[in-house]
Length: 325
Image (cartoon, rainbow, N blue to C red; front, side, top):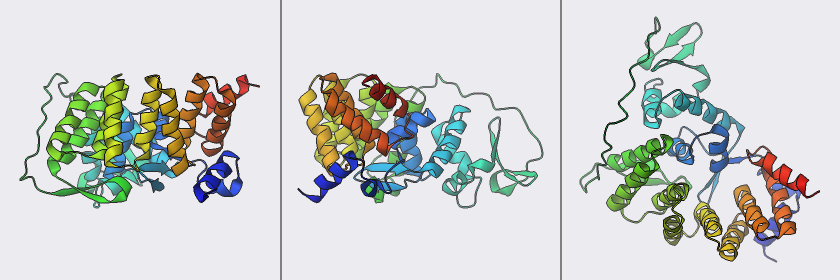
């Protein structure tokens, strides 16, 4: 028995030593469910550094409670009517070190219509530290009927960087970064079709890319196009065999398409590499339930609850276990 198999067995059996440091963290999908925002919004905040993973391994990010609190405040700004790119821009002017530093001060940021201010004692400070003397009415909303235009970056675009898979800095032009941000904004606004077109435009400009293929697969899954989603997940895995989120998504799509054996194999493979990935236990339990393997499903549900007792899906998991006596 190898070390990975022993770790897997220890986690499934609830061994306290194996669970040290992994219990109670939220994954990206859990964060999105708790915050009631699309997964793409959470990924956008991670790319920009506004949310900072506590752990990161094989394209999987985990967040502790402190990051969840920051996420809740970002989500409140979004629900107040600020787009994702607008949040970035408005936070950037509130702190000398930019939006990432401002995100750490969200408990002191006051929203007044379309204005954000930082509370310092009895004073409200705007961009550049300017003291705010009063309140004013919110701006008029932007015309939602404006056409969506995708600008494909050319070879002469100025180079930039973004935080990529595994925390590495991946070269990315400003136009490419804008397409990623635009896709996230469109998804958050419910414009999934336009969001997919933005990502397709990015793939045309950038060429094969595991991260973008994975994001496109997620959107296609939500749009109900399972066959196209499956192919994009396969593309992401071919480009990055260690992309465990893509392998997990592929398992879910295969299950939706009725390929339960392949779906189980995909998720088993994920858990052999990352035994503490609670999302994979959750999805595998659902697949095993659907084919009548209740004992195996129960085992994975219990493991899921041990790993993620504060997950937004924990109550459902407990109800399923209670129904079985």
